[in-house]
Image (cartoon, rainbow, N blue to C red; front, side, top):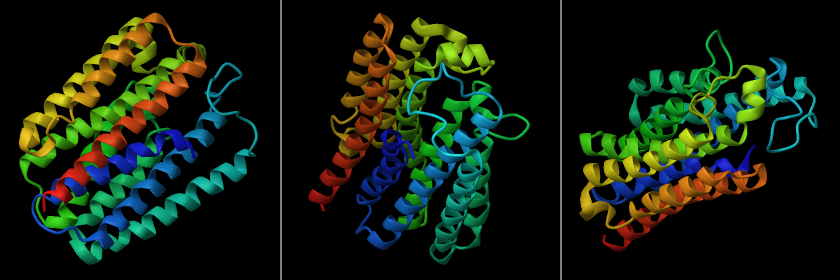
Length: 277
């Protein structure tokens, strides 16, 4: 399930609830539905990534992170599609609140969960993993959750969703940085294999800065306060560590810290907005 990365999907929903709190009381029932949908969709995508990377020979003995080969491929495949089915079932509930206009969004999310690792052009293997995260862990959960609360998606919310997505993309970048050696050996193309360790360090820093800029540009100081300082500081600190060269264990810890920084930023936003109601 890759628990270290689950704060990414959770953070997008919580951030949207915090932004929606500025417009009125939060409907916690639909907030809970969005949280369940986001987490199940991410777990399904993680399961599918494990299965398809194993099937296609992307996972080798060189790959870092959790141990591979513990779960039989067939069982992992069934788990992926079962979890995706559960995510779809929960997602269908949003039609009660938002109408059939949300159905194409749900279909896109389900296909995206698979397209990340499978299909004729797997996104994670063709330098589009970070782009996919910005879309499916930033724009989609933030805008969908905000819409279910307010029945609108103003431009400022969309801009803020880009910042949330960039913070999520920083997590994937660290993951790919950790796996540069194994990904290069198996022909998996990521931004990290393209730009190398030093380029990845600079990109990580840039993502943190752009995340802060979009949050302030979208919501302004009156919404976010000084919270975007967190991705700025993380970007500089993480970039310095990556530039020096992190062993796999330390990179895994930075991955978790990056995900938790996103969740912390979103949670603090929600808390502050609730206190101001």
